[in-house]
Length: 220
Length: 246
Image (tube, rainbow over all chains, first blue to last red; front, side):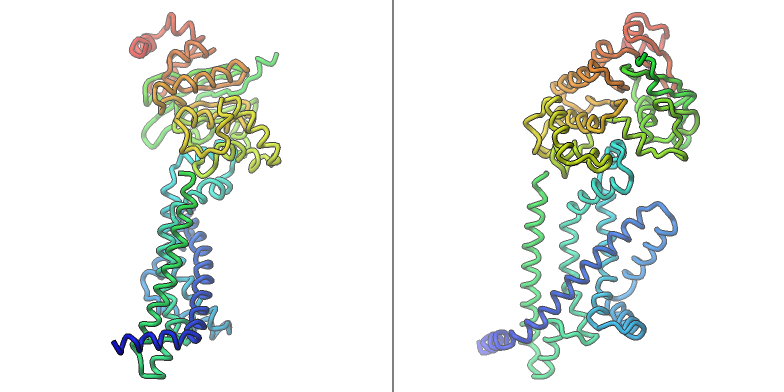
């Protein structure tokens, strides 16, 4: 009982530092996922381009991302980018996360594009639309609709993975929990507190994804 | 005279899919306002021929001339050609993420740059014409097969094509919905639209077709006026086919 009361004390008493961390986590997740969508769309289009060299580039990228741990990617990008380009830590972290999620999002989008009936493409072409316009106006809007559940899932993974940036020194949610824990030697309540914050973020995101799915279902 | 204008001329057309030789030395001419109906068993190549006319399939050899100009994939912008040649598919292929009206105005606004208000006005006229004046803002998933196909016809007409191609437009429909689509097509034919139609609807062929083409194993076996072929086919294979479907 006392432990539970102590947890609530920590949870309530630490809200100001955790809100700082929450802001960083949210900002980092949103920025990195937006970049990841752009990378993912681009790589998906490379993969279905039917041009060998582009397909190889896309395959190599996906292989590298899937074949190495995220923490290794973050460290390489952090030390690489901050050494050479002198970019701020935030952007090094965002780049690492986007580089990683981009590969998974590329596979989701590619699968969704290829699941669209080929009659849709033919209908677009038969109306005089060129390939690019058909892709943009006919195929991609349908592919994105179909990809929403998988993308939502990938976003949840991305938000939780963002905790790894604490290892390059960022004070995101997890970074705050680690710092507070080691400063006070009172680890457990802080890690439980941070778990609650992640649960709440994922709850909100799940709610938003469900709303979007419902909105998009009007045409079904 | 305008009825001498040649809309489509196909000469010595050959098409193979790998080892499979689907079209063999096809010659065909379609003049303005002609309604040409292609009949034949499944796999006889009639759909492939139609798709070659819209360059959804690219020929292996021979020539295709559209409105006086011989079209080659290398030297022509096929998108431009397709604007003049409308196509209606067996499975409708409506855009499910757009309403009926949005389906119809998509290509005119995106391809031709027609102003949206203008495209909407013309789109509504077309939808009224195919009997769907009460369905502008409905999504395709809410329509019956016959209604979907009529939207598809309106969508193709919105580009003001010179020729309309129909690839088995009623084959995916429930029997009771076939007639509404055929009636729409008949109306188009009466307005003087140049049409090439692949169909199994012999009643439609008999009633609407100016010319009938019977295809068998990738060749045109018999070509002539529809009533002549129906009444006294010259070729034994045509006779066999007709007796099996009539």
